[in-house]
Image (cartoon, rainbow, N blue to C red):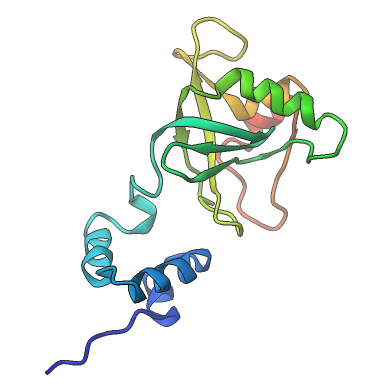
Amino acid sequence: MAKKKRLNRVLLVSLGIPSVFFPGLILASILGWDWQYNLEKLAQSGGYKQSSEVFPDKALVTEVLDGDTIDIDNGQTVRLVGIEAPNRGDEGWEESKEYLEDLIEGETVILEYDAYQIDKFGRLLAYVYEDCKSNLGCENNKRMVNWLMVKKDLARVETYEGRRPLKYEKYLYSAE
């Protein structure tokens, strides 16, 4: 009888899955999740970073947590990549959060990912686009919310020193 493989850190690293997911995946396997079938299926679909279940193209914004972080309908949290809005308790936090709520809470948005797709807290990192008709920054009936938050002076551009530049870094800086 063949020995059943165990789901462990070494195997998850070899599959390219971020360490933030390890505890949940291991717990799910202990509770009966058929990880061999599901991880094989994931590999066949192009791997973790190509999964539309993990990285959806569109999502309904269910809650705005602050000026640069939202929850979406699949239960994940999205951090608007390339910007930093004031943190809770800091000056401008409430204004930034309220603007983003008015802008996209309850709306379906388009998500676009860069080379960095997830942060150390397990949040998706994405450029968020809303539908628009003829407002500031509207191009082809969509507008990048990350850029708009900087343009409205409700967030600042956040780059990652010593790391590869973001795809829209120059575009974000053009909003300042």
